[in-house]
Length: 352
Image 1 (cartoon, rainbow, N blue to C red):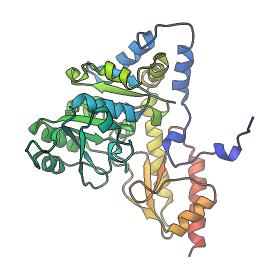
Image 2: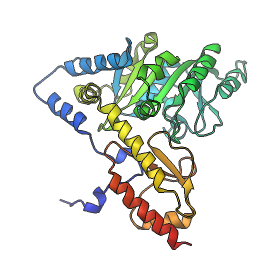
Image 3: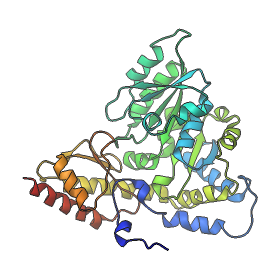
Image 4: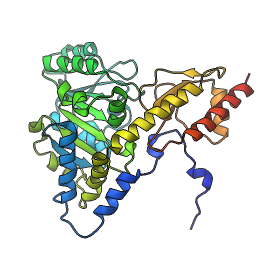
């Protein structure tokens, strides 16, 4: 058996997917592992998790559990569109850049209509431009809008911005979908109730991310416009997203939602991002690539500095947003951030 090097287990900031499972999700999974229950979602854990979502969002909604964010987004958008429809998104949206054509595949061909953006944000103006660009039968008919909260570049739509986008969607008969892979981080950033950021702002469908918030696997798809959920269970089955032992997808949500860990985890991650940002002041040649609003920090630095910090064993990505990206998770250790900051400062000094 190959041993795991201790160095491999040290915290990194390349992705919040690197983190393990938080205690609340782990303990709920362990509780769900006792005895036998009915399969395919007809179990008390799935019912309890669904009710917990309805309580959290202060409304009746249809709730489904799938394995990952690509499936959640793709199947949700497919439920909004026919094959000849178009989905308006920004050029940095995850559905456009990182889902291998899955939204188009599961909708049997709905086309992504891509708007240029700043910081990965759609605007009412960009939606209007694409919604009215062409009205002829030779062009896909715009049917839905998808936005990411928080964005791929770590920005957060304000409630005012969400209301303006929703109003524009209504003006053109467009459904509104929210990719919430880091929904909890956006909630923590705005300090608002989940309802205020979703159905009260005109969001029809939300994909609520659990994996990046402390779970091992699993995303929840919430239909606030319940008629849009028609046959969504069949979509899940056909796409291989109907878990036979569904309780192991839903039980972690019980632990996360009933304990409040979903928000505590996100609050901690956001706090760590802000802490890291404060450590960059005074480091020669290094500066923030943009405001820190959730759990992501983008920094700009000479390539030589980035190469040197990689040589010290640190991992991070540079292909997202055009700067070096650092993500912070539910279990991020402040001392580990400070260690990285010292290394970064030393590497920057070495290049002067």
